[in-house]
Image (cartoon, rainbow over all chains, first blue to last red; front, side, top):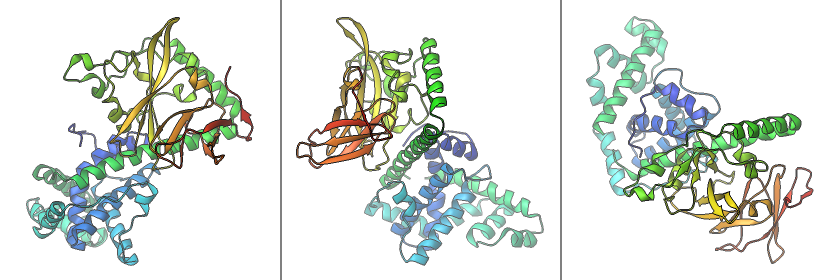
Length: 187
Length: 249
C-alpha cells in the first residue's frame, strides 16, 4: 500500500478518479474499507462473505464514479454504505455474493487466509463500530445509530430528534468522518 | 489492519480504474474519428507542432526512477518532447501524458529501469497502454535516446507486464522497426506490436495459417496465441475499411 496520505476531501478524490487518477480511488478505498467491512460483517456474520461484498461494493463505487455518479457529501462514507447495503440485499435476493461489477472490471476473486478470516470475525464480534460510536458526541451518535445501525429514514429520524433532515444528515456525515479517522488510527 | 486480501483488492481497484480511464479515452477517440476525421487530423498536427516548439520542459521525475540506494542506478532523464520521427505516425505519443500514463502500471515498471538500462529517458513521453482484454498484459512505452553512428536516435523501450503488475520484461522497438508491420515481443501466450495512425485493426497469421484480427488500442495491439512461449505470427495492418496499410517508407 502507498504510504503517502492524500488529505483532499473525498469528493475531490472521486473527481480526480474520474479524470484518470487511479491512485485517488486507492485513497478512498484506504479511508473507508474498514468501515464498509465493519458494516457488512455485523450484518452477514460471515467473514468470507463480508470480504466478498466489500470487494463488490468498491467495484460498484468505482464504476459509478467513472460514470459520473459519486457522493454528494464531503465524506463518501454514507454513499459507500448505501452501496454496501444494496450489494448485500442483491446478494441475499440471489442467494450468492454479487460479483457483476468485479467481473465487468476483470477483478479476480482473492482467497482469504485463515488469519484474515479470524481478523474479520473479530471485527464483527467485538462490536467495533458500536464501541467507537459510543465515543462520539451524543447528538452525532444518536443520528448515526438511527441511520446506519437501525437503517431508518432521515425524515423519521429528524422527527424523533426534533431537528431538520439536513441537520440529521450533517450529524451522520460528521460522525462517519470521525469514525473513519478513528478506525484508521486503531487499525 | 495489515491484510494481504485488502492490499490485493486495492491494487485490483487501481488497475481497474486505469483500465476504465483508457476505455473512455478509446471510446471518445473512436467517436471523434468517426465524425470529425479532418478536425482530428488538424488537432493532431497542432499538438505535434506545439510539442515540437516546447522543448525545455522539466522531465517527469517519479521516485520510482529517481530514488535509488545506489545513485548510479538513477537513469538520466530529459524533458524534451519525443521527436517527430516517432510522433509523426504514433498518435499515442502526441497526446498529453495523462494521470493514467503516470499511474500504478507505469510506476511498477519504472522500478526496473536503471542507469544501465539504455540511454536517457524522455520521461514526459512515457505512456501506458491497457487493452480491453482484462487478462492481457499491459504495455509501458518508454522513449529513450541512443547514440548511433549517425547521431542520437530516439527508440522505444517497451515494458510488458501482466494485469497484476507483478512481473514483466522489456523489449526494444527501434524507430525503423516501428515503421514495419511486425510483432515486437511476447509475454506468455500473448504477442504484441505497434501500428501507425490510421490502422484500426491488425490481422495476425501464424505459420499453421491460423489467423485472427484484433483491434488497435493507442497504436498498439495485443493478441493471445496458442502456445507459450508464443510463436510469432506475420502482421498485416488494416484500416477502418479493411484495406491493407503498407509499411511506412
